[in-house]
Amino acid sequence: MAADSLFRPFTHKSLTLKNRIVMAPMTRSFSPEGVPTPEVAAYYRRRAEGDVGLILSEGTVVARPSAKNDPNVPDFHGERALAGWKRVIDEVHAAGGKMGPQLWHVGSARNPMTTWVAPPPVDAPSGLSSPGKHFTEPMTDEAIADTIAAFGKAAADAKRLGFDVVEIHGAHGYLIDQFFWSGTNVRTDAFGGATLAERSRFAAEVVKSIRAAVGKDMVIILRLSQWKQQDFTVKLAQTPDEMTAWLTPLVEAGTDILHCSQRRFWEPEFEGSELNFAGWAKKLTGKPTITVGSVGLSGEFTAAFRGESSKPASLDNLLRRLEREEFDLVAVGRALLSDAQWAQKVRDARHDELQDFTKEALARLA
Ligand SMILES: Cc1cc2nc3c(=O)[nH]c(=O)nc-3n(C[C@H](O)[C@H](O)[C@H](O)COP(=O)(O)O)c2cc1C
Image (cartoon, rainbow, N blue to C red):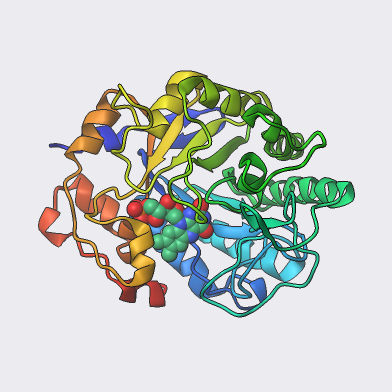
C-alpha cells in the first residue's frame, strides 16, 4: 500500500508537523550525570534530518530526588542539563525538525539493568512497588505538591528553551501511572479512591500545572497505557465508559493529544470492535491521538530487552486505520532507534533498505 496517509501534514494549535510520524520516547542512558552530550544532540538531529515529523525525547526527569532510576538518564532541570537540552533543540530546529521532551518520574519502579539507587525519598502514592508489595512510605501532601510543581517548572523550561511540545509520561507503571492503578494507589485522600476518575486527580493536577506554565497555545501530549511493566495484563479501563471516566478529567485539565501506548497497535481495546486504544481514546474524547506499538516490525519491544530481534513488517494494517482516521499520528520506536532514515525509506518505498532491529542497536547512539 502507498504510505501517503503517513505523509500528510498535521496541525493542532501552535503545532504544525510535516508528516504523521512521531519518534517514540526511548530511554538511551547516554547522558552521564544527567547531562545530554553533543552525541545525544547529534542522534536527535539525525532523526530530524531523516524527516521524522515530531521527535519525542527519551524520558527526562523532573526535579525530585528519586525521579530517575539510572544515573545516565538525562535530567530536565539544573543548568548543565538544560544547556545540553538547548543544544538538542537548536540542532533539531536547524535540521527542520520539531521536538518535545518527555517529562518523567519513575516513582517506585526500579531498573533491573542497574544496581544504582537514587537518594531518598522515593515517591510512590502508597509506597507500593506493585500490588501488595511495600517499598517505602506513601507520598506526603508536601511531596505530592512539590512533584506537581516540578512538572510545571520543567515544562516552563521546555518552553523557554524553544521546544515545540511537552509530553508527560503517564504510562507503563511509573509514578503517574502508579496513581491511576488501584494496585499501587490505595490512598484514602483526594488523590486516591475507588474510581479511575478519582485516581486521575494527580495526573490532572500535573497537566494543570504544566498548562499554567506553558500558556494555552503550546501542545501538551499525555502518554498513557493500560498495561504496566509490573503486569502486562492489567487494563485500567475495562469498558468504554470506564475509559471515558479516566480520560475526561485529563482532557479537561488541558491535555491536547493522547499518546496511547500499546505493545502491538493492532490489538483491539474492547470486545466487539477493531478499534485500538488510540482509536477509542479519539472516539471517546474527540482529541487527536497517537498510536504506537510494533509499527513496521515483526516483534514487540519488551522482547528487545531480552535480546530478541525483529524483522521489517508490512504497514498495510496501520495505513488502513490511519486512512479511516482512527488516530492522527503514529509513533515509531525501535525502527527509528536503529535507522534514522526509516521515514524517508517508507515515503520513497525503498522497502528492501529497511533494516532488522537487533539488540546491538541498544548499545550505541547511531
Ligand atoms: C530502548 C527503549 C527505551 C524506551 N524508553 C521509553 C521511555 O523512556 N518512555 C516511554 O514512554 N517509552 C519508552 N519505551 C517504549 C517506546 O516508546 C515504544 O512505546 C515501544 O518501543 C513500542 O514501539 P516500537 O514497537 O515501535 O518499538 C522504550 C522502548 C525502547 C525500545
